Image (cartoon, rainbow, N blue to C red; front, side, top):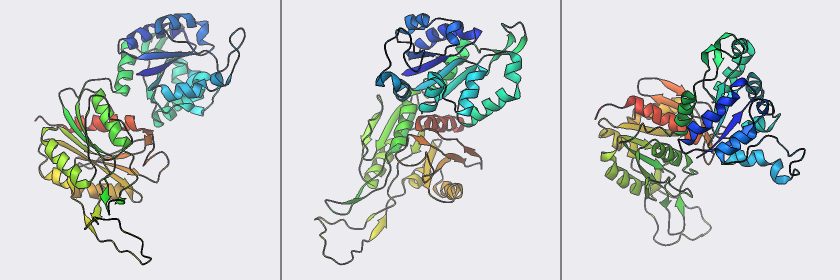
Length: 401
């Protein structure tokens, strides 16, 4: 996995070199980006030697460097698209303010705006700067947007003062990075069954009924669970996606095929996540030959497909059962009713008409609804981050089997 490490101008910049070594132990490929102020404290050569990668120091080539070209002009976009996470350590009050205000003043702040990868910041600064209302307001904004903040430690600071502001321990930062990337193995020994994608119900040999599901949310769940050490059984309707390495991938086409596969493999599962968009209806009788146009109205008789989630609930036992509710109106109300009707432990509700959510997007905005009445509304996050949040809650609900 590839991460970008932003190093900003503070005394703690030298600790970023130690952090690089620690992150390399997790087999992470690290691209370092340094601000101009950071280069006053530590040289780019140090990070180039440690990572074996070019260190990015400017938006455009300058001075005796190679002339700027189209490639260098859009490099921030290329980096933004290929990284799995952006980490800024140390993060100064200045860079936090730029991030919060959406100012693209240099390569690092522009990268922050351009990436959809999760972001982790580890602030380090004078205690008065840390406690200043402006800094705390900026941090609140970033947290609300889904940025992960590793709070600084308290102690003796380089300025001679004592208090909060010292860069968090390398191990603490590394742990947070692994946590966000899903590199922890807290699901080792568990089997998680996940359904994904749409189903297709044939009208005739040429046409079928389906929906707009891309399968991205289900595949993100499979990716997250695999990274966390689970044995993953991914039962997928037709998609253009590739299953994560190590997952058992079972392709199906119709709702009935998905039902049979789920019922066959569910007894071995600890957690079942029904993320697929299963067709609610199918033709009562599919035509054996192509239905030809004859100019008159055509009436199709539809019958309900099997309710897989409800069928699983009847024999759930100690398994954690999670359903999805893609809605267009009265989202939480409809999802809560579905939760009660289906007998799931968690219902993941999302408004598919909302920007950044729904079908064929790389992000999602969901509300987790629990049997006990709790609700957890998540901000817009990448689907992989949403997947990790769902798995976190599944773990919290598990009972000894």
